[in-house]
Image 1 (spheres, rainbow, N blue to C red):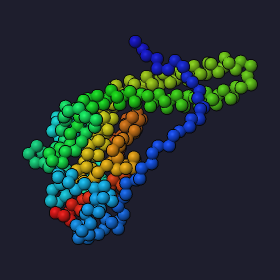
Image 2 (image 1 turned 60 degrees about the vertical axis):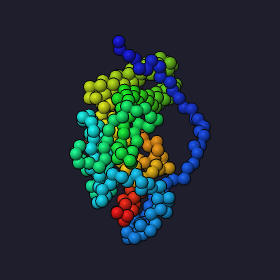
Image 3 (image 1 turned 90 degrees about the horizontal axis):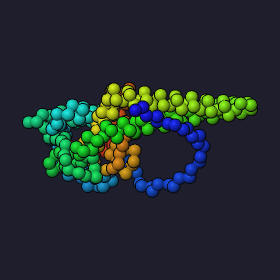
Amino acid sequence: MKTTFWTTLTLTATLLFSVAAPIHAATSTPTATTLSQPASYYRTHATSLAQTYQLNYGAQTALTQNGKTKVYVASTDARLKKSAKLAMAYWNQRLGRQVFTTGTKGNHQLTIAFTNRNSTADAWWQPANRRILLERADYTQAPSQIKAKMINQSSATAINAANQKIIKYNRSIANRANHAALYNHYRQQQINTINASVTKVTNTINKSQLAYKARTFKYANIIAHELGHSLGLNHSDTATDGMAANSHVNTIYNYTKVKASANGFNPLTKADTSRAKLALKVFAARH
């Protein structure tokens, strides 16, 4: 049965008041001066640096003596392996060197694996076991959720564009004697265009498996976040950072951008990168 996504189109021009969200202090970002000190400085000030920049040296269990980590994905899922590869590339690109490399079952320091355990988190870093665990149920359900959000976002964009056209057209025929008939006819044309656009988007998502591609990008961001913990980073208080507790990249729900992208959307900010560089410098100084 063919589904009609929009049977009505409502013109809205409503101004809504908003309630300010609670303000949290942004996580401090290390300066260039802080990142260019001798090893003795990092050894002496390790504790204060951890407090100032929210570092956790106890989480750096997967780093080897040379400050690198070999990562092994304990799964046959090709898309998950690509997510891990992208996540490692995100950090290596930002840090300017190869900190994360691909390991094997017999030669690695960090494992990425699924768990059937239910949790409020979709993933977490276990320093003691040197594992990043991903909740299998969340991973399995993600494509259908992403597909729905992709369609909703595409629909909202199409409706907004149609509303603007209808408003402009309505003004242009305001003095016409047959205004109502012209308006209703044009409005129905826009509704038909929206339905056709949404149907095309839905068919492309299904045919090209774009929801699975978007999940690959989503989990690249999730894994990058957990890799950040393995570098010694606690959560950031800055919502836009990749290391924020509830970090997310809404671009993965953008049909057009996901379709065009080959390597996803790196969520790591300058603050994430600077904190990671500092954590690695402290690690090197103490080992």
